Structure formats: C-alpha cells, structure tokens
Amino acid sequence: MGQEGQAPDYYQLLGVKYGATKEEIEDAYHELARRLHPDVTGEDPELTARYMSVNEAYQVLSRSVEREDYDRALGIEGVKEGREDGEGQEARPQPKAVKPPDIQAQDMRLLDARLRRAIRDASGMCDKGNFWEATRLLEKYLKTHPDNAQLRKALASAALGRKSYHEAVNHMRAACKVEYHDPENFIQLAEIYIEAGQLVLAEKALYEALGWNAEHEGALRMKKRIRDLKDAEKPPLQRIFSRISNVMKR
Image (cartoon, rainbow, N blue to C red; front, top):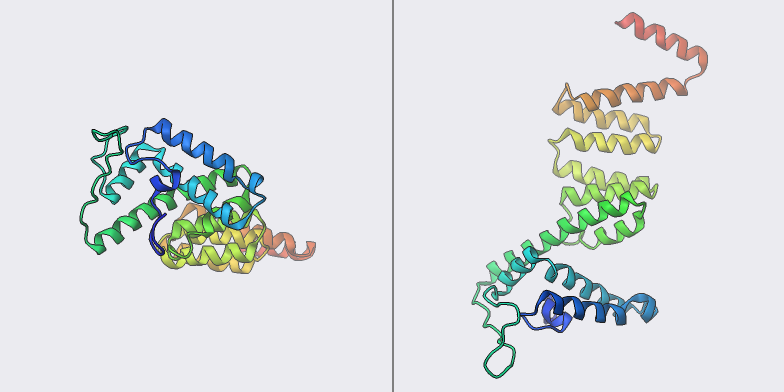
C-alpha cells in the first residue's frame, strides 16, 4: 500500500513482483479475491474496501495496455515479465525521478482511464438492469470528476433506471451545464422530464436544444411527441378544438 494520500502500488496490493507474468497476477488475484470476497468476510467494511482495491489492481495489471500505462506512471516500464537478478531475488527497478506536477498528471491519466472503463462497465450493468450496481460503481468518481459530462450522463441513465427522476434530472442538468452547446444533452434531459410526467419542463429543455440547432430532427420529433401527450391529457371536447386550431394554423 502507498502512504496516506498516495495511490496504492497495485503490485504490492496483489503481492507480486514488478515483472510478474500474467499468470502470476491472475493466481495472486484469485487467491486474494477468494479470501476477501464479501460473501466470505461477512461484508466487513475494511475487508470489503481491500477486496475492491485488489479488484481494481487486477483490472489494471491484467490488461496489457493499461498495465503499460501504469508501469510508465511508476517509472518501471523497462521491467520484463519474470525478470530476476543474479541471486534469484526480484530485480526491483529504481523509479525515474519525476517532478511532482508530472506525477500528478500521470495519476490523473490513470484515474481518467479507470473512469472511462467504469462508464463502459456501468453501461453494461444498466443493459442488464443492474442500475444500483452501476450507480455505486460510478458515484465514487464524483469527488474527482464532478464536472465530467460523460460521468454525469451515465449516472443520469442509472438513476432513471431506478426511477429516481429527481436524481437523474440533477445529473443531466450538470451535464448540460458542462456541454451546453450539445443539443443531445438537452434532448436527454427532456426525455427524463417526459418519463417523470413533467411535460412543461420537457418543453423548456427542448427549446434549449432547438436554440442550438433549430432543425434537429430528434428535437422536432420529441416536440411533436410532447404535443401529442399534452393533447391526450385534455378532455375529449378540448382535444377536438385543439386539432381544429392546429389545422387552421397550417
């Protein structure tokens, strides 16, 4: 584990050497996961946190591209799998001297890569109906990436799946604030309002979308959809007069 406030060393978390083979990493992970899984530990908070850290370490070190990025961040990209010194001891490299700003930038790149992977994984969870699981996976990145539009949109989708409309709206409005020039964001916000039965607010969101692209086909289709939904809520006689009025306007 790293010092307090620093990212942990994934190799130390799994208990393997820097030059460990993929098979050694897999064996170490499966052994730790077997001992630390919440089903075994009774969901002890400390052991569950360690289990999640071990899982995170495995997700990085088991994938060649992400492991190479991680090794570069540690300054050990020259280490080969299975490399040992003449006495059979692990040949631990000397990390390169890197200035603190560069270390911070490397940490952020690793964190960004994990976030992108988490968003992809959460999308798969939502496709399977695991909305709560997707939410828990994504929420831990809010502290470090509060203004990431993709994270907010993914959280909005997960919240919508849980029928938590207020939460979904808040995440989607945050995404709209960051990517205010993208009409698709306002259309997605309007979709949430429609599902929540807030047609007036859905119309306002569409006005924003059409303000950026007055010919946006998706926004125009949704505008007609909202009009039809509002007409369906009117009493029968009022619906007739509404149709007549729309015909006369053409």
